[in-house]
Image 1 (tube, each protein chain N blue to C red):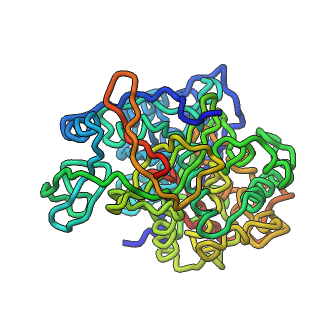
Image 2: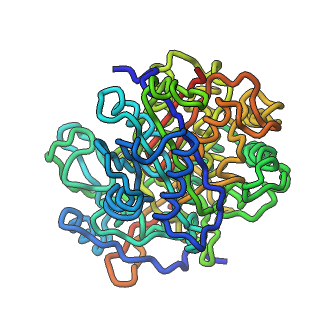
Length: 390
Length: 129
């Protein structure tokens, strides 16, 4: 069964905070839920489906459902594939709506790693004896930064990709972030500034990495009849795809991501090609994440990503593929260390024509949002959405 | 600056991987073998990642390999995470030791070295062959 046209995103809200010392994670979930429902013109009592991932405190959805007072739920889903979860939730919500499991789905994300002082990218996490890979990887100092850096190193080896090419991704994000009053890093940076920033995990520099921020976001998904009865522009779900990639018994190719599979599924369902996409939200935990995913999604051939991202090709109004016009995780926001939610939210803004005028894509009728969750060099989830303005 | 002074956290074996870590204590690198397909795999486990069949065994590896990818974690005690492709086929996530970053090249020949951990079995890392 195709999900094409089966549901619409009618509410989207990004919490303006980037440092929430005075809030709890549950309170942030509640505030983004309120924001998204206000945006949609719906209320708590309309919500009969709730979706969240591992950032929600408590067992699956249970504690947040109680905190929010969601007492009319018929459907819950706490699928956790890291930062890509929220794109998968949109697809799962569309499927639940299409099969009559719910009518109004609420998806929330929130967290406060910045206030909690997490060394998100560079610290090795504690070993969990029940996780089968931990005993082989934690003693080796597995970190988020190293996992992505090894992909970058191999990509450079096979395809001649350079640090300057990767830097262009950060440069493009910074050009967009200067217009976002909420962005953590609003200063426009140059290729030289990126490659001269300190190395974190070779070949990735400090400015190749995303920000660490508190905050969150929420989405409301509903059936087309309800969407048309609301006052907001209608953003329809046209294509969806999911995939999981890992070491595969020791035969992992670090030069591609699960986007190769989730993207192909989404494009097939949508019946469009990468050339039709006017705006793309591309997960940007690191610059290399963007480059590999752009190749895997088919915006350029495998190995050509370095050339594709160079010379401002990702800058709105300058290049062929405007990306992450909110400044992305690289400059704006990466709430709870999970950037998938904000990827969907900026795509919705673009399709509604509500992005900042300086970065708004003209006649933006078709957008793609893609997320990677977990560790690109080890195991990760991928989720792709193709969204359409009706 | 040295790149292998980091204290290594001890791996916590489980009932399935205990033989792997027992071999490690003897300085032997073992890997999984799927008896249905003849393919080797890593990390070892009680089923084949290719077929899900329990028809698997733990076999001795040569301990030889080549560098597939690497990085330097520029933390207070820097170290060199790496992916090494074993002669038997599988790639494993490990660290490079006894080598400086400027001498590291993808494709370089490597041999296994067991590095002690604080209070557990030693772990397989790799040095220039």
